[in-house]
Image (tube, rainbow, N blue to C red):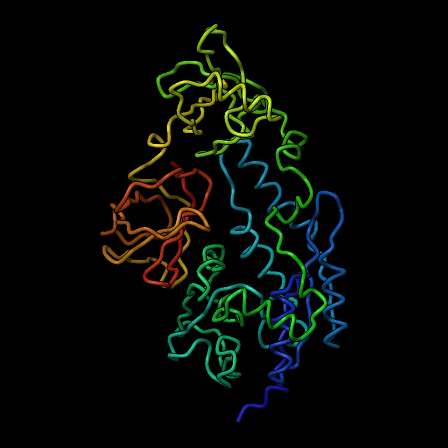
Length: 414
């Protein structure tokens, strides 16, 4: 019989309800729990998560350690973020941060402190090839938090990353770059719970962060408009205003710098409209007018006009290309910078039963890899969708699934 009290587990505390619930769950199961906080670079220098994490550790009476990752985070994640936008791509910083910063540093620190595993509050699951249960079975109360104490990473055990049970909160998409060794040292206790259940447990336990709202902002730009941040970081023509043109090349308005737009975006497109009676050109915001008077003007002057969305960029002429909704659907995409979760290095891509997500909250859609007969290592693949997809965005991640298992992914090129 395994005595949980002899198993030391580090919990990555973030200051939110999910990580706090993980720490409580594991402590209640009898594990020797410690809290780790990864201090990352913030634009305004303020990190509320540190204070909240300390409160949680004090409430649960567990040791608490802080890891300074500011310099490395800024060098790896923030510079990548700025560079991608400068190249008119829409980056996905979490998919870089997770393997290169967050899990790398947290696992390393956990091991130094004598921990057998690192636990995080991600809504995802891990299963290995040696057992039919997720990460082993010690108790059945929270199946995904349990694992065998003897399990160590080796080249015969294969670890599988699966989607969380809560479809609305599943975070497996963001974890597709984790490797086998990292997956062997991580547990996700919330993988089989819903966000609603976690909130209810946090309130029941009276955790200090039980009522804390979930942030939807970029973690290092909280309370900061990312567009303003980019204007200060990027000194390039992409921040200068220019013409908006339709897919036929006709000028329909003005943009405020290409860096402010992404494929499929509707907000912020200023389109020239003709008044029915005077035929005078007016420049109005077709989506979010500055006030109600402008909205009434737009409605009165608008005739036979359809909403326009960002369809592409002409950097050489500093032009924003827009089109109707039907014009931003694509049947295929090119994906590069491939990363496959399972070994061996040469991964035979399946020809059937394959689906892909092109953004974190998108539904997975059936697809085929045009060069699926090849054994892909690193390189570029062409993906054909079973159904055309809206706003396929360069810079975003394309993550491939077989059923609810993540097999890997890459970066959308075009």
